[in-house]
Length: 374
Image (tube, rainbow, N blue to C red):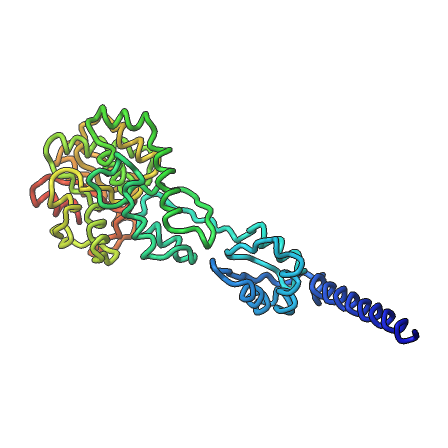
């Protein structure tokens, strides 16, 4: 009889001990040493497909939790209904286990803000993402050829160059390259409004041609008010059967073939490429960068002007426009003089080509090219 009484008492003591132990362990999980003090932030990346055990091991290695096995047992017994989502997380360490599980259950991953400036090529754009560990060169190149994303707009174009709209994008580490490209193309479609499309049709330009011209305008100037004028210059040259002779197209041809060194040399104007508008008539086969909204509007709203030439004006950051080749030569001489007076050394290497660089459409004959590029 006494043995029977002692057995339930022993069981009760054992249960009490186990309950106390469980309470103590739970307390340790929820109140790890130092959790009440502001801790250093750490980043933990959980790739898709990571096992539950590995998740808690990664958290332990980062110092977010104290005991990976104990945390896993607690999760499997009490929180298994909360699915732990993959992604990049930022924790302070150490942290209460339920706070960690709740955050991962909600998918409160780190969000990266990527600012894509106007005028970048597709490769330059993608590099902004993969330098942050988002996607990679091969994934983006694969997504770039998804021209079906713009049905009817990219006919005859092998990739989406020019259709990746420059803007600010918020992405996570697990956002795929295809998702990013989808978002950028959708953004382009929102900004290529029906009004812009109607204006392009009125000028007898396809969407691809309008975006191509806009991309050249984008690379030629950073001055918003000059966009329609530069578009007007190129429209005039096209109507007269003159080659565009746009430096940015040469730069793009070199970039596309992996030959760009950062400086445009005289010999580069003879570089054979369908994108080189010194060598070939008309617009290049496709856009040379991603134009912004202002450049898109400028391309389909060219200024009515007699101008056929322009050269960078170092006095105001814009350009000097000319209707005749003779006036153009005078503008070049004045620009040289202004650069010299501002301290530019005679005979120094040409400035890198860009919105502020001396960009000079010239006549077909060789003297125009030589005069405009010095």
